[in-house]
Length: 216
Picture 1 (cartoon, rainbow, N blue to C red):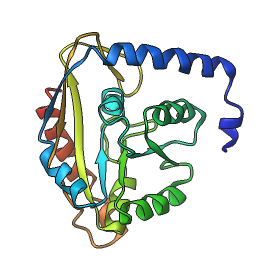
Picture 2: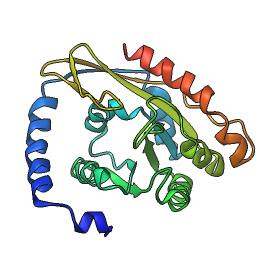
Picture 3: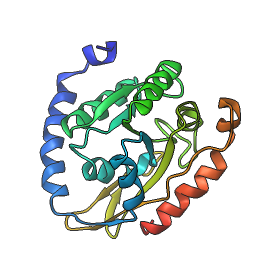
């Protein structure tokens, strides 16, 4: 257990408990439409590990959409990440702890091992603290090392609250029409981690296309 987990305050635990109930009550009213899920589902049927890439600000509806599927989520070891980690566990996700600044190499090794074993990993390449919608190299390096596909995924809502945070975190309102859109699975073209890390702009474009399909 991390030091932050051991120091997780009771006030945060209470807020998380209340938040679970609010999320369940809210999310069960969403009217969700899924766009272009066949390609990644084929990868799952083939037991091919792959990476879901999603922007941090769209995390909530995507966590709900993939609840209970056993997808592994890369979550920061910062204290702020502890709340997300506990929420993700409650929703049936596995955890890989680390970020671009804390535990990065350990997280990359863990991701590569899980991907080669046929597991699916979800990464917010602009998390945990931005800049928003900029593709950090971690997911690209993990994909290159494991020869895995990256599947862009985005969420949009016709009505949503936006927090005043760096990522303008989206919370779809009750009875919102939520669209979940998946881009085509893509591999990095670089043959080394250094070359893969330079493909951020290309994958930002792929993410932008997924956002467009989601109506964002």
